[in-house]
Structures are given as structure tokens and as C-alpha cells.
Image 1 (tube, rainbow over the protein chains, first blue to last red):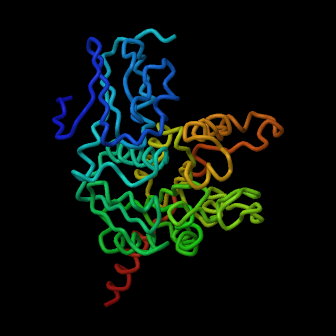
Image 2 (image 1 turned 180 degrees about the vertical axis):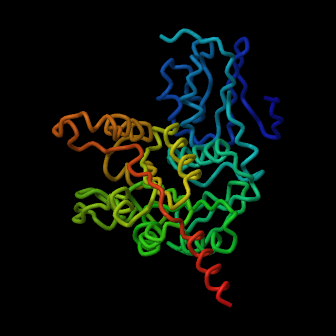
Image 3 (image 1 turned 90 degrees about the vertical axis):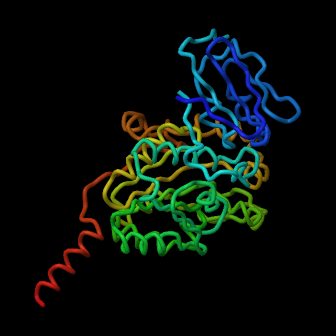
Amino acid sequence: MAEKVRQEETEVAQYEERKIVILPRHCKGCEICVLLCPASVLEMKDFKAHVARIEDCTECMLCEIRCPDFAIEVYQSGKKGKAK
Amino acid sequence: MTFNYDEYIRPGKLPHIWCPGCAHGIVMKSIIRAIDRVGLEKDKTVIVSGIGCASRMPGYVDFNTLHTTHGRSLAFATGVKMADPELNVIAVAGDGDALAIGGNHFIHTCRRNIDITMIVFNNNIYGMTGGQFSPTTPHGRLASTTPYGNPDYAFDVVELSIGAGASYVSRSTAYHAIPLERQIADGIAHKGFSVIDALCTCPTTYGRRNKLGNATEMLMWFKDNTVGVKAAEKMPPEKLEGKILTGVFKKEEKPEYCDEYAKIIERVSAKG
């Protein structure tokens, strides 16, 4: 898929080919992504979601599918990380 | 691969007005993915809504949309479908909008079996107006208008629509967003009236008053308290107590209203 061109501010975390993009303007800080993540990749920072440990991500997409605010995007690399 | 929602969202409309943790956004994403899965053309798709939290959804999506009067989403949707049966009409409504104010429209559209897909955003409360009890608020639950517990018993959307004669009836939750997407896609592809009961959470006015925890805990409640309708057939009745059944409850082929209407026009005009 072609890379999206965004007008607004984004927070990008990248680990090899895996990429997690957070749109702080959309995030309302409901913590659904942080609490659902089975590998504790995400954390809260300044009342917004923040990618803290991207290398642990298993690319399960739970956070992206259940983010009600269109604020998180996970670009899969196909290589799974190690779940704790 | 991550799904590109931007194609279906009106530019500059996000972030939406829903509260932090409101599951309506999750259902909206499922609807967008379902429309993409079926491959509907944007110009041939109409999304109709009434009034309420759920009914704000058409404002964000880039289809032909109608935001109408309270409870009348199905009345307007029927009009749109009859005017041009080629269009794919999707009606969205909250539980109060669909079952209380629009209750009569709902049962009669079920009976008529017109080719519309109805998605009920069922969060057990009137969220936008301050948490009054709705027809799907469970017995004993607190709302701003039932401060000592709700004396009424709730409507079961699935049983109501089966009884009224809808030809496709299913239920899923915001936690089960992928099955929900599949059911909506199935409902859109089905010829006839489809009702999808999408169970949502309202952490602000329902969860907080009833001490159900934060948005995530309310979502996880769905995970622990729902049973698939096929799995439930093999389970003993005592294990099913207090559980909510999910899945496809009814799918049958029935004569569709627009086709029947066209037949009448053909027959009467042939007589001259």
C-alpha cells in the first residue's frame, strides 16, 4: 500500500519494517489500546497513547481494530515480535 | 495490512464528537471495512440516520448521507430505496432511536422486508441527552431517570426483529469487531431487511453510573459474557445463564418489497 501523506502531526515509531503511527490530535486518551495490548507495547504519556516498546509488538492489530478514534495505525512487517 | 480509512472519511471531520472510550467509533470502523469488503461504490451507497450519538456517524463518512428526524431513519431509508432500488441503503440508529421513538417504523420495516441494512448501535442508554433509560436498559440498572433501578425489562433486538419478520438477524459486539464486520458485510449482501444488533459501550453515562469500570473493562465484559449461537447449542442451560448470545440468528430468502412492488406496477400497467 502506498504511504499515506498526512497534513497533521503524527508520532511514528519504527522497528525494522514494523511501524506504528499515532495521531495525537485524534487520540482522546481512553486507554483501550494500552490496556488491551497483550505485549504492553503502548503506554500513556501526556494523556495520549504512546509507543514505548515497539520491539515487543506481535502485530496482533488489537489496538488498531479497537481504537474508537482512528488514532492508531499498525503497519505489519510480517515478522512477529516476541510476546512476553 | 493496515486498513486505509481515509478513503471513506470526509476530510477534516475527525476527531469525532464521541466521548473517550465510546465504542461507536469501533462500530463505525467495522461498517467502513464491511462496505469495503462488499465493494460497494461510494456514489451508490446511502447511509441514513436519525438523532442521537450513533446518528452522528453519517457526518464523518464520505457516502451519500442523510441525517433525519428522531427515529425516522427507516422511514427516510424506505423512501430512498423505493425512489431508486439500485442504491445500497444502510440505516444506522441508536437503541432509543430504533426501538422507542422509531419502534413502529422498525417493526413495520421488518415486516415489509425491504432491502435495507439496519445497524442498531445498542449501548443500553440515551447517551446524548444525559443518560435516560432506553428500551434496552437491563432490569435494575441505574439511569438518570431511574435513580433507584430500572423497573422495566429490556427489549431483545434479535427476538423482536425475528418476530417482526426481518430476513437477516445477527448480533455482535464492539469487542468482537471482526465478526461484526463480517455480519455487516453479510447483511449488506443479503437481499431483504437485515438487522445487525451491535452491542456498544457508553462509559460516560451508563458505565460510570452503574460502576461498570472504564471503557476497556466494559469492552472486556463483552468478551467474558457472550457465547456464540452455535457453541451455545452444545452447552448445558445452566452455563448459559446471564450470557448474551451472538452470531447469525436468522437468514432466509423471502420476497423483497421493491421487487414485489415492481411486479404490481407491471401487472396493473399491462391491463392498460
